[in-house]
Image: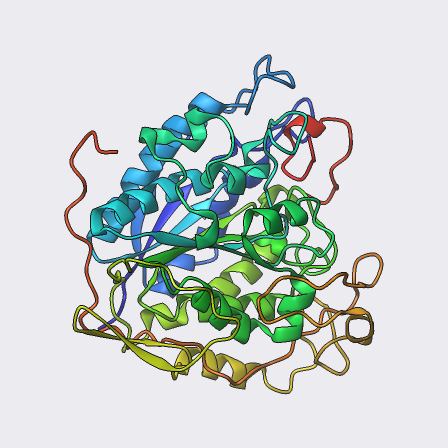
Length: 453
């Protein structure tokens, strides 16, 4: 049977600073722009509607006041969590169209509720060009929730956002995998100190997108399931600049497609959210079209005939150490067989075959004459350890890369969507009451996602 996708719009821009004194962030328009390119019919998805956000109005917010729009974001997160939970209750696969990265708070709350209901933990695969890990412990003040979402959902920051319903953290540090941040990310050492596993772009590219997806799943083997967050600024601005904080050194559309396909090609992936695309920087709609093409192809394993609805594993009493490399094994839990490691995945393998031999992997006019890793990346990169932690340093080409290479892989990502017999379905919910083209500058830094303040 197929896993039915349900698309839910979350057009909030509450987590970003105003681009100018007379405008508001345009990412609230993203769901409509993507729908205009036939996203829903191409996914054969159910329209799950829209969670309408409160009005964007920073008012008299000043540095030191905490997160801007905190009350509005909290209310919105509660409403969004309810809608995501209802989609999962129907046995569907939610695809949430943001909006800025503050939508992660609603998704995280829904996942924590779900984990509590099944007696397990839900993990997070955080695919983002920035770590979004600014919090009062490493910054002089906070302001824009979209630059602090990973910190908030791991329990750092003010309780009215980081501890909704008394739940804190929504995701444990050891249950988070961060993919696609730049090697020079400001908070990379803070992530390492917290025990959050990361694979920056140089390591992701060195290992390849398919193997990285498989590796991420292995890191979360002790979780009952996981949620996928994708900020499109993980893409290099040479191919997709329509975001609020473009940062050179990102991945290509083809790499994102393979990565997404690998991450969702398992019944343990519970849903996906897409954030930060800003149609104000896409007047002809070409970037929206490219994003839709990538999402449709990347989600193909979800709607494959052999796919099964999202399923959850029972919690393990004692988490096992993270494995440095994926392995083939069959594991029994309560009489249930679960395949971890390499599994046959027609969706990912077919994608690799389509891409095999292509020299041009950045579809938006970015050509790679030889495919594979660019010389600058090959010569300057320090080999990543299998644990996913970056080496001492990565040397990247300066400026925006004109060539964004990808190593096409035929290795399937496992476990496949068809490997899910006997896995635990979600039980009833817990009882009520249970516990853009312009880079960031110093002007307005207090509310900008990518700023350090």
